[in-house]
Image 1 (cartoon, rainbow, N blue to C red):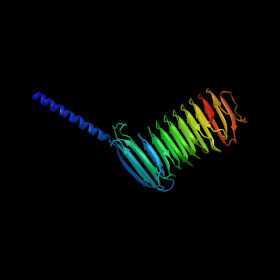
Image 2: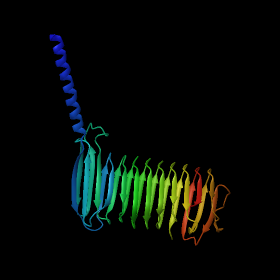
Image 3: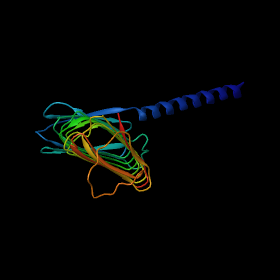
Image 4: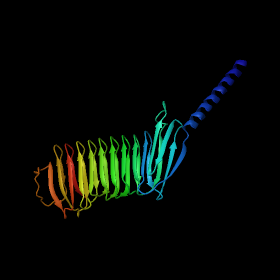
Length: 288
């Protein structure tokens, strides 16, 4: 009987210990938040860098920057400072911290005219309804930019996909090693997209008086345009198939057109210049 009672006591102690450890582990993983507030003038410059975690930016008041940082553990630190109209925020893991629980997610409300510089290894990075210059960089980060205008948009990723939607009057430059690039209703004086093996998809009208250059090495390029598009087109793939689905007017060019490998022509008033180029990927110009 004494042995049975001792066994029950040991079992009870074990259960209590397991429950306690579980609770402590859950507590260590519980999310906590910190908020930072800054007063800025016009065209403020804001930089946010994190090794692991998401960064989301939306418009707020005209002279305030509000930052909400969400922590998953206490083993990560935030360094933040303001120098005049420049704000710099960076997070880093403490030694020995598991990246899965040591990342920080940032949410920012900033003046619409502010310039931002965002960096994250795995993202995602999202920006919407701003008018300043944007620079977004990541390794595997998913990049999503929506409803921005009148600014420079620079995006660099290694493998992360990039999506731009409703970018107006922008100076756009996108570079990715293997990530897909998707652009819908993106116009401006310069729109340039390059990917090594990723796919480039453009859905829009190529604006007016713009210079559009899409380049891949092995990835495919597809442009979906309306029947009344106004642009001068030049497309070429060394090894891939090239075609267009609606008539183009002949265009004098020093480049030689090769059936199935290239095409040259204009549509409408040829208001914009469009270059589509790949080494071995397929290229298709398609009517919406």
